Image (cartoon, rainbow, N blue to C red; front, side):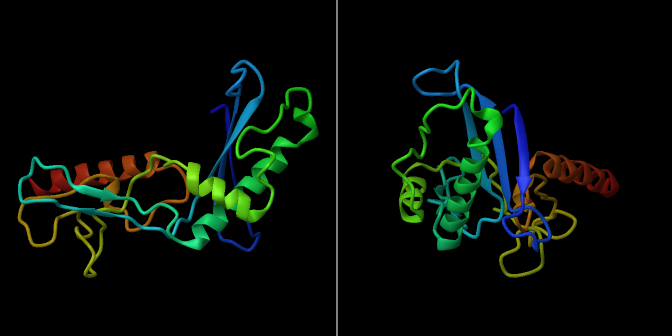
Length: 188
């Protein structure tokens, strides 16, 4: 990605709810021309599940991300695509603009864009929240990253986030790791 941006779909929101990336090239027919605009809604409501398939720790778990399982998530993607199109139609890009490849000029209505999204959206590679921190029934770790009900076991990674952050997860994950290291030093 050459450039990224965050935007609020509604000016009254406390923080941006859309993320965009733009890179040169990436045209399927001619990778040396054109540009790509990627979109990522930042407040997904869909929530997947990871479940054990057996009591053997070497067996793979069952992972069901349940992507786009709420209409709000689909609607947010449609909003992002519409904004990305506005960026792509900017006069400053006229000299390098080609025909839109994805979702393509044939996808114009919200329903057509939503259908494209349902069939083609991919992960943003920010898996989090599978071992959330807290004190409710779904919490796995406490505020010192200790696994509830077990002695001497902590989880120190992005899985402890109770909710996904509003952007890339790298910096918050580093902060969790630093705090976890401090907690381990304190416990010695």
